[in-house]
Length: 349
Image 1 (tube, one colour):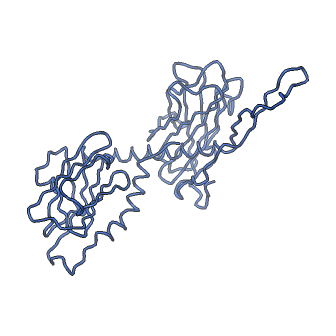
Image 2 (cartoon, rainbow, N blue to C red; image 1 turned 90 degrees about the vertical axis):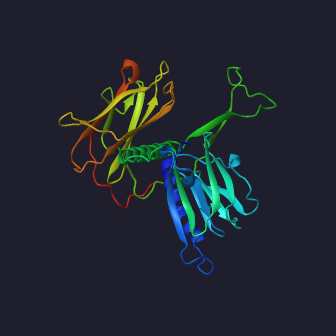
Image 3 (cartoon, rainbow, N blue to C red; image 1 turned 135 degrees about the horizontal axis):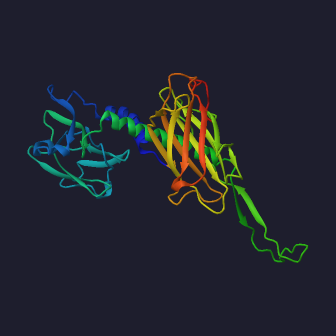
């Protein structure tokens, strides 16, 4: 099953804010009245000064090191000289939690070497907080993404979510068959040939996969044809279907293809979205292709997700076309696509 770290991380961070804020809330009865909690950024690509690599910690407060473009490898992360005064835990993949349960001495410096899962390391130093405490330190190895890069990443995550859910839907009703255990007396058919007997059972199906309330699954937004034949068929050696996953700002058109040609695999080549009336090309925000590198084998299914900005007009018609790689003859088209406003009470299956 595919995973989608961008959306999952956003969800985890949103859920984490409340408990972290509650855990890090200071007790004014013992903190100095001029004590100041801080949340700051550390941009490694700007070659920060040594003082910026110091993390100020205070007893009974939780300090968080958040890797903005990496994952924490807690097993290989080390903190020297802390003893039992600081407990390290990991949460959400990219969060290192420093639970400070004891005091650091004035001038004491504790080397903290944070390991990334990709093998890189971040060298920090824990020092006594005095009147300031770093409750959260956001660490960037690379420059923060631009608005365009963030939009592209979110579109890719949306495509991945829709393709994963469609894969989940297609798995409903699948069966797995295996030979029965050998019988004491072999079963022989009327022609004297031993028969093979199989036991078939439904493929285990996850029940908890649900779409978020803001994403609506609807039937095909247009007419899918393969080489001009609606839905394809044996003549063209392929069957296909299309589904839309729609929200007010963006829509994912998911195409599923079933290869019926035992002689050759199918691989997607060029693709384009156009306005049906003028042939003008329309920008695709992201494309997600779940097809093996060697292509869709005979009897297998491939999935493709195409993210577009949901048109303002619900009546304008569009055409999505996917050609076969290396000049293959099979051409998929979803014609006459329209995108009405999503129905708010639509329930995900």
